[in-house]
Length: 226
Image (cartoon, one colour):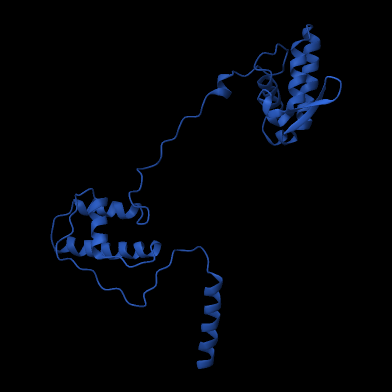
């Protein structure tokens, strides 16, 4: 933001001064004028006068940041902000102790991501868990039929996000890939054929305008038949 412009030389040259060229503010919500006030506080030699002026600056900060009233112990918050603006280098008789700089400068602890990265997002994490469970099951008819049902469901999920046909072999390969090679699809396994008029759509939180119109139209047609 452009804050001011300075005249140089005989008045023919104008230098524009930008905030981006200035020192970064510790508390931007109070502005640079408050920073100048705090810097002037440090230059007052008399401690009593310095404390008196510090209280006046806190009142100005309260006016500039009225939302601080919504916080508990807001007066202490204002004094904490004053010390932060001063760079924790302000010797005054404050009603509250100066906060420790480390409490405000310590970087937050990084929270690790929950769980591992999904190998195939269009199938979802639950599919991976099911495949992991199948890997530990003994071979047999029950396991084969479970793999078939799983593959049919995965094919449906695949077609929701990929508007095209998909070969059974592609789904089988995905199962083995997600399992890390631990689960082998039985040879000769075939999936049921898809209906020619089968339609797959992405899940939605609400009903589209076209769907609403079709529903109203179908409702009218049912009424006529009656």
